[in-house]
Amino acid sequence: MGELGDLLILPVEQVAPRLLGSILRGNGVGVRLTEVEAYSGQGLDAASHAHRGPTPRTEIMFGPPGRLYVYFTYGMHWCANVVCGAAGTASAVLVRAGEVVDGVDLARRRRGESVPPKDLARGPARLAKCLGLDRDANGLDLLDPESPVRLELGRQPDGHRAGPRIGITKEVERPWRFWLADEPTVSGKLSGRR
DNA sequence: TGGACGATTGACT
DNA sequence: GTCAATCGTCCAT
Image 1: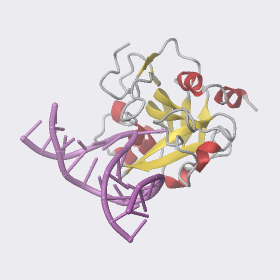
Image 2: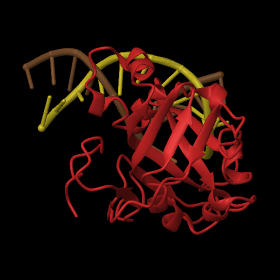
Image 3: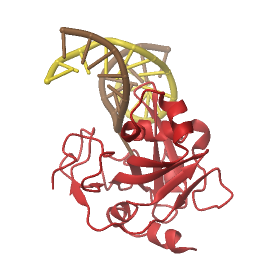
């Protein structure tokens, strides 16, 4: 297993911040990750989709690390996660926001021509839309160079911020949201806060 | 088989 | 700042 594969089996709250600065590349667009959230597995994190055990939707989370977990929410949005942990566990890193560093024209076509560049992938559903991710992308192997969507480990940026995760109603205090300081692409209202 | 609930977004006051 | 849109998923009837 490569460097990234070794990283992904560490505790998910350690994996998540180390994915900041990495590039999620696929379907003609590359996004440099500036904001992520960690979700742990069955019985460990009430905010995780995997908390109650495997279901048809969350099945992929219980498989090997490095796969893409894509889910549908609020009747209209898709969001993407990097599956972490060894097979049998079910942690994941939600990719919340990033900077489009490649394929900007294509990203604008998917998101809308009038969307400012910094907003193209600012928010989990927006990021997924930039990359053209939907149901069909669920389960893709991000570690396979031949895969239509891949994760490329980037240089570890200096320093990051941590705080509570956004949009959840359980485990609301757990500080498992991680983002890069002073990045205009970070979502949420506390993006500048330590 | 029904109904509550979203790991959100964009439109609007 | 507030709030509706919109439908797959999951669990309780």
